[in-house]
Length: 586
Image 1: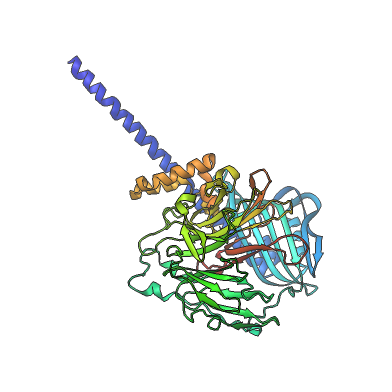
Image 2: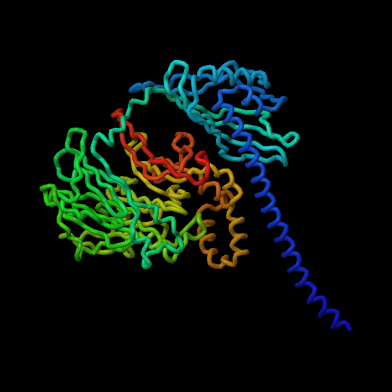
């Protein structure tokens, strides 16, 4: 009897332990999901309130705007919005928002504040009020949020303006209606000008290029069964003085008909594609790189292709090219971007190719840290238009879905380093060791940027002699919901879907990278563009928020250049994507 009782005790103990673990796990899962649901409900309520505010702005209606504030609105120290001139150049004035007459504010003061602002406006072209983040949810029916007001219109003086203001707002729900019970201006700015800085002369200049889809995606062999959206990526644009006449020309990559336009030197361009010796039709050309690969003083042309072999054309020095592709060893298919740089200082330009995934058989894994790309390629220039694949030896395969590549000597050691921007994942910096190999120094240098990377550029923003980095990502209007999309939540989903064993190595890799920030990873992925400032000692700091270099939007190509010749690098970033039925999604 005693032995039987002991055996039963030994059996009960493991069962009880398993039961406790199961119960604790279920409670944790329930708490994670409940918090996510609370955030979703709170965020949607805040968006509805901000939408009503935005409607009031567009209608120039003080009453509609003030209706968004609680009758018991109270702020201990607030003031009336004013605009202080910060700079004036080339007909463009930049004003910083300030607060005048700081005092305790109530709803009547808010009405006067709004009336003063709208009283300076003749008309509104477009307005947005976006939820940036939910900072706190003290309890159900209360929230502290960050929101961004964006207004474009014309002032009473007839001058066009654009305003951006970032607020912190305290909200609460009363009888099902959410209202603002307190707010604080974090920063704001207004830009005015006659919009005459640039003039669209495309048609007058004779540039008639139109993009085309790659017809290969519609063939049985290349049908993108897994990731069909890839068929909408047609190609990029590059500029270079290909004929050495002192004028920059333009090359358009394309799904079927890339085009080379020669700059005539009189603000007009001529399509010289065929005249220059390039085929009238080239399928799937994603990128064109002009560089002197044989050091004869003439620019050659490397063409990276998505669904076919890459191509190489020798510049003949007379405005024409000769196809030297055969036997050149130009790497594999599915190229999305390429950049030339002499990584081993042998005097010959090498090429680094960024590649995507094969959409016929693959989907991006996890959608936030994808590592199942085809693998990038480093081509060493052997001379005489022959290249060798040295990717494995150099250690720069980088298995992300690469859309941006930039060469730059960030540590001033005389060797070109590589920054890679990856879609659906992490962006990374590779240090050139000077011996033909590279090391991933992303974590150590603070450059492991997370997001949907589209492009990367090196440039010295602060003129301190050290190269900084600008990366274009996606700053989604749904960023606030990324706060709920923690890796814990993804791991729960993976467990339910039965892919946890497949995904676990990625989770471990992310955890090793972000450490204590593991729970905020979802927010970081959709936070938007990053400006990484180089301190000259091997470390970078993300200053995109303080530098106002991270606006809402789905950004693609970006570059740094001094557009107004004031000795400082400016940033140009291409933005645009409609991800919902309403165009104000982003």
